[in-house]
Amino acid sequence: MSGEVHVIDHPLVQHKLTIMRKKETSTASFRRLLGEVSLLLGYEVTRNLPLVMEEIETPLAQMQAPLLEGKKVLIVSILRAGTGILDGILQLMPSARVGHLGLYRDPKTLKPVEYYCKLPEDISERSVLVVDPMLATGHSAAAAIERLKERKPKDLKFLCLLAAPEGIKYFHDHHPDVPIYTAAVDDYLNEKGYIVPGLGDAGDRIFGTK
Ligand code: URA
Image 1 (tube, rainbow, N blue to C red):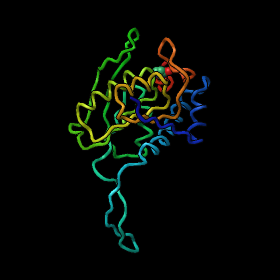
Image 2 (tube, helix red, strand yellow):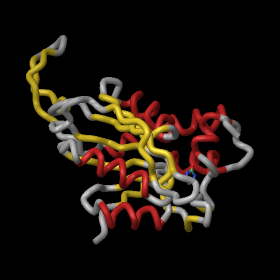
Image 3 (cartoon, protein in one colour):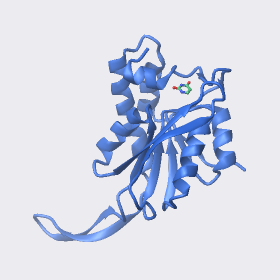
Image 4 (tube, helix red, strand yellow):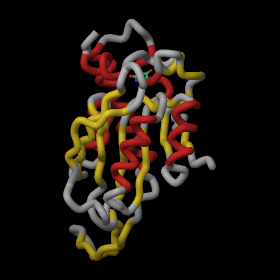
């Protein structure tokens, strides 16, 4: 069974992504660009958020005007690289709620191991957006979604910067109901679990740890 994949091919997103991919791009530029791209991706991901009409008063007249319906969106960042996307999305939705899920990839098995989980108590009425720049094997993303489904959110979306076809397949084999939003789908995953051509290790490039 396969699910929805939305490739956000806006020219500004594609231009910024190309600069991020370049190996000579500095940590400062990479981080700034990821913030900018995330804001643009966030704009697309939130396109269908439901609205409700409310009576307001402008300086000139009363009117019925649209406002976002329901509880604030919950953004769940998969540590550590998810932080890079989170910052951009929060510029767009400053009052969103934020959860963190710490999952690292065991370097031998490439399987996710959870080491941290902090979410708002009740997420049953919230739309949840899970963010992680790289959908590589798809194992961490699928594990994160599984964890969140236990808490029965209103709906779930997954947002990344780059996806590998293998990661998309694994993710949608496990969660065909969760749409993926990405700036690009790259060629393949190499034997070390890196997306090719990709941009390298997103966490290292955001935080300058290599
Ligand atoms: N995680 C990364 O940071 N980069 C990849 O290419 C794959 C997983």
